[in-house]
Image (cartoon, rainbow, N blue to C red; front, side):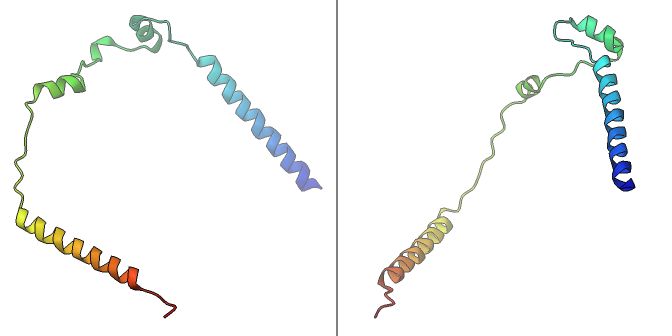
Length: 103
């Protein structure tokens, strides 16, 4: 009986602590949706002299010339592998079609 009362008090205490933390977070929340960049920097204390302006990904990609990789294909090897695979598939199809366990 005492254990149940102790657990109930423990749960109530945990709920009270978590609600205080949630209230503290809600009171510090600032909506910056309709603020200008200068107002946002003032609210958050951002020093504009320390902000580095970096190029965007698009600007970085535009600077590079397109690079093409010349690939060498061994067509004879591709034909031999393709023919052998197709022959194995055809052989498997014929064997599966002729298989009849009732004979």
